[in-house]
Length: 307
Image (cartoon, rainbow, N blue to C red; front, side):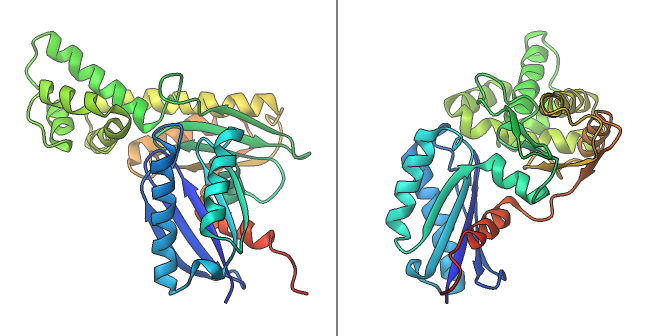
């Protein structure tokens, strides 16, 4: 049998999806982070290898049966990244057509195949990507945690830890919010949390987000203020690409992708309201399928027609 592999990789995880020649989803796999600009190429390669191997094992398939691979990766907008990752995948899947593109491309395909559309990604990092009726595109954000990524899990964690640090400096007793964040790292005091996160910030900062999401849904005011600000930042990203492509008066879908969404009812509601206010004809939608599935379908479409 022939198989087609889709990979979706970011700063926290890598998803792999295997389709057969009819487009049926056969197997899935998961690996660690695969954004080389956040960690390293060696770690990205290990994650891509692990996710792919897991999917192949579940399908009882060999790498030689894979006829097409599309990898949508955070950081692959940089030609150097795309070239190196493609070279690596070629050594693993020698019979396959290989394409490495930005995660934004496959996320947009998960929202709509063609026509005007916007995708807003918020996971470890954040970015927005839009396409108009003529096929022109615009991108905003995605420059990494030291430059932007506002509204991402990293930025939300930074805001939460800043609020706890300020409270600690003022001599206030630890709040329920501070205790919840500390317990997410199995740490009992602010100095312990600070030391733990500071040693591996890119890896550990996003782990604060689930505690913030849970606290917001429970009514914690500090958590809600942080998520309100994140929703505003993400809406500003989307507004940038909508403005650049003059989509404001058009009918188009906007899909939300990434681990920041679907975790907190409070945040999802605030985010949807902010986004809906950007344009009178904008429709906030759920993606039709995951970006990894979109990548696998793209690999299948790219396959040569049978002779």
